[in-house]
Length: 376
Ligand code: GDP
Figure 1 (tube, rainbow, N blue to C red):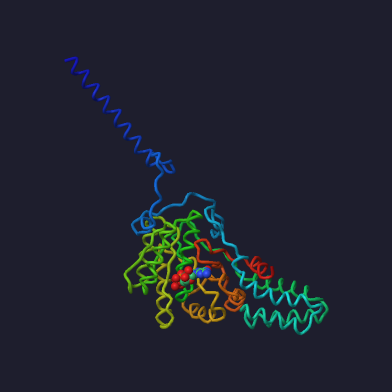
Figure 2: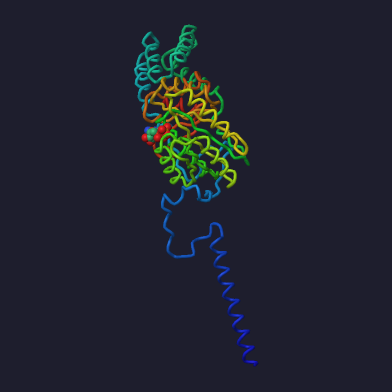
């Protein structure tokens, strides 16, 4: 009898130890940021395994988030504006070099400046205004020599860009922020959304993408590819479906799962302008309905289209209240002066510029750095 009692006690003791070991194992696996228990490193997740609507919102490791939320966090090497503006600078510097080589200011000086600015797509109105101002100052003896004229042009350009509204992107803490991206097909909307998703994740924000361009199946696929890269979930609908429904669904999911930011793509077909206007107005209304909160409407423009982009832009301004411009493909054109025309003629701040196709080739627009890069 005593032997039986001892055996039962021993068995119970052994069972207890086993449970404690299992329990510890589980809690170790759950510990946030704990190193893998195995000596073998875990292989990186395949791209397709991340960006589904079912995936829980992945959180980037905490990094310092700047106030405007637009600066690139630690994992990202920001692209170089100076390098991205190589073509525009190449064009402008050719004229400026010729101008500097002459001893005095004459009719050719004004021709060179005018041609440089017009070819860089600064626009007729701004070029005329800048030239008249400089000519007046030379006549009054306030400026002497080509270098002084170029110095004054540099300062005037800086001044005219700096007076525009700020470039910060708005995120209201504790809200389900929605940023809508509008613009015609091919300007770089999807690419821009992918780049921003990556940057905002790196800033510690939890992002969700909404494939609101239901018109083209390829658009949603492309967005999913960017979602995979950035490790953010994507909400998409049926091809040809109602884009407002996709955005609505995305906002609901974002609110339910605690995402800070929904980046919503939209279709950019312009051939049926009335439909486009109505569609965008509806998407905006739906996105702004509680718990959604539209904090940016970003018009994406392709710098290579130069002044033609302004005509396109006006059509979108009729439809939605645009808060800023993302100017893409600055690297591929000598028409970088379009930045000045956008800010002065449309009255919109350029908030971001795209300087390449890579995931990190999107930088916050800095007017001083822009003018410096132009004159460097
Ligand atoms: P969407 O139709 O407006 O969504 O445009 P996409 O995002 O599909 O972009 C159209 C093309 O432009 C793609 O080949 C992109 O890689 C390219 N692109 C986008 N942004 C930039 C940029 O800043 N620089 C360059 N060189 N190409 C870009």
